[in-house]
Length: 246
Picture (cartoon, rainbow, N blue to C red):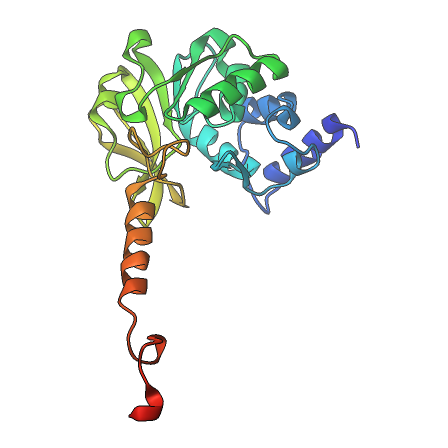
């Protein structure tokens, strides 16, 4: 089927009152324009409303992207920083809204940075800047930003990202640990709006990216605990017990 038709159907579904994830014309028009198939491996999967996986990283579903963008409320000519470039799709949709030169994206994973650059160029958004950075540090060289979108969960907004906001700027992020809420905060870190529960992966620091030995501390510690438990087997699990002689 024609990808343009699939795109129209996708956005129609997101706009329908049963979902209501796309509320504004700017987000709807942008999502109808960006060829999502350029950012995922299978064309038909691109327009299904579900998360996908690429290089060990989560590719957000269309509805999740719509929720983030509606909360961000970016407008034409806003300077935007996307923390967590991933495969580049969110940055492409923002480029349609604010203009390519105004979108900056960073990711801690070098492989994803290269993937995002390639995907954006293929989709016609080669003017979006994508750099390899620790998300908590932001991209101070191009600050200040009218909007910052953090596509990873944190208990509180990183101080560097708040410092890089314009005075009347807006930062959108999943706030929390196990229980997360999508929020918008101002430059002082004060929550201005809440947009309901979400579930995102935690913000990673250097050494925890998918291309590193371990993705994050939780994964590493869980593995180590499992290995120790296996070494402490008891009772019938030990082959050296002579049950016939008991």
